[in-house]
Length: 115
Length: 110
Image (cartoon, rainbow over all chains, first blue to last red; front, side, top):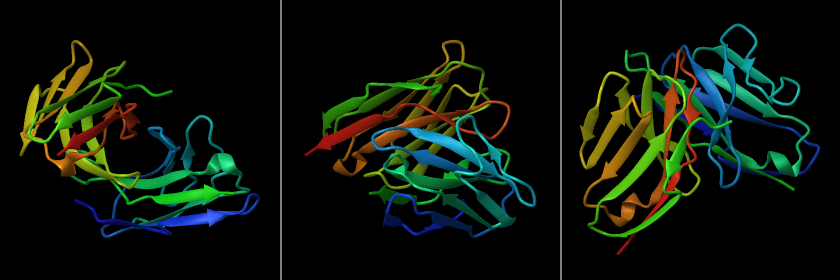
């Protein structure tokens, strides 16, 4: 299975500021995703991070609010821009295994609190 | 919108008892995966079951899949206090994007 790390693990931010979350994988992966988990809720897919091209966003999520970079096959960043208290969530990156089973593994998450 | 619904939303049992969680989904799937989440941290992958499989075991975990009913169940046998966590099912259709269920909060008491 892939080993995934995220930085920071948690942060407290002021409204109107931006935070960039990093996701690092120990092996090259083709598919990488970013999810959001609002307090007490399940996970919702934000976007697919595509290497070498613009991310593909799900309905309700836009690039201006959640810009994503994917410079190579082991690294991605998600920025939460112009934050408001409603952005307080856990943000998780995930990768799909290279095997035929397509198991998806998750990073430890970044817990964000916006005041 | 969430595709999967899980029940129960919360489950409290005594250590040593079995815990069963159910997941229903709405559309055709390629596979279904179960995850555990402790205290709002990252998700731990438990087991993947393909759409052409009906049952799968891993240690104390048993997963069943009924594609005709669009449902799956996760059974944890001989539960331990360390099993206390939230459990989520997630499905994939034609691609690799996961659609998550609403989750079951399991509490195993000593």
